[in-house]
Length: 433
Image (cartoon, rainbow, N blue to C red; front, side, top):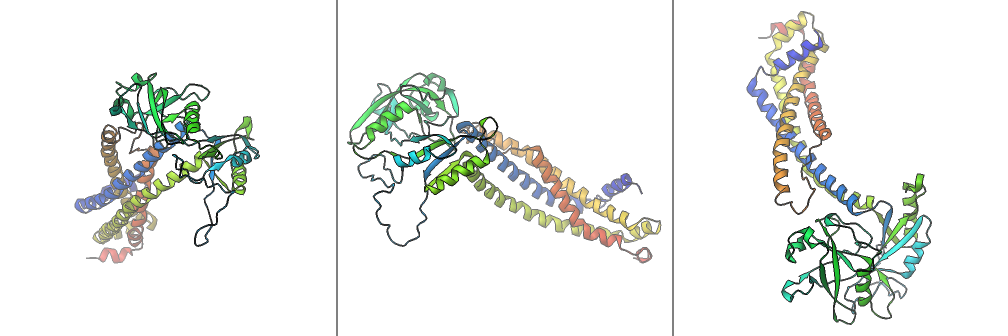
């Protein structure tokens, strides 16, 4: 019996009992449908996260912060006058553990570090159009790393860190609130930023809107260039108190081809930071943390799909065992006419594969159709503030993988019935009533 004949016969035999086969296909459909959706959810969210990180960050820097305390001693820690703790009682920033000048100097001389840029934390109370009334004031947070990062812009341009003029990139949600027709109309306009200085006096500084940023998972708040940050930070600095920095950005001196940063460069700088009681985190580290959480959630959701597939596999076993029982005399006749045990095994195994293919293919197609409609609807409504987010991303490789996995599950489920059919004695089978 040729391979093509075996496949044709297996496909035809799979539908001898249409109701039984249909119910088995439906059980596989549920597993394929949910598994396709969960993999698409993971792909969509991870794709958005990667794009966001690539847009707002550069890959040749490491963010440096004080290392987390590993002291497990019970009770309060003894005061260390040389430590990094900064009193926040008179500081409008409410600063806690921060970097100091000695930390910045230590980072600057580390092997593999080209330069280091300390970031000063600033606190803004409100933003309003220039000359606006008190009713036009809105609360505003400033992203502390905006002076060394990039924004995902809806309009305008990135901050000019070399400019002596104060510049700001506003989140898109402030455009309408501040009275501008759209993001483009806000570019070039002047806003007032209100803040409290170190003596608890209200101050106002003007800044030009150079950009409007899309909503982002990683860059919340407004962006301020170095000139604006320095103006506010100088006013909020407590006289006589050492400089304190919320974070430092160290740029790698790459040793790879054309100055490329290698994994060894990253590991070496991180080791030096750890020795100095500092912690370093790269863009890849940030991405890895987020993706670990996302993949964990997707894994839990996928577990329910696996449960459905396990239940469906018992259905396949039951369907084929009943088919073997009903076709006992037919099996005996085929073997009496010279069909080998291997061919009989292949015949019943392929029936299981056909059932698995139908269930997985129909489930995947249904998931793609429904998921695409849901994703498009959400992109224009609930997720409209997150441009570029396709919550369900159906990648061909993932869809094919789901179908192949379910076909493999179906094949394994069909092994027991197929072996039983292949081992039947032709004489006894022909006598079966």
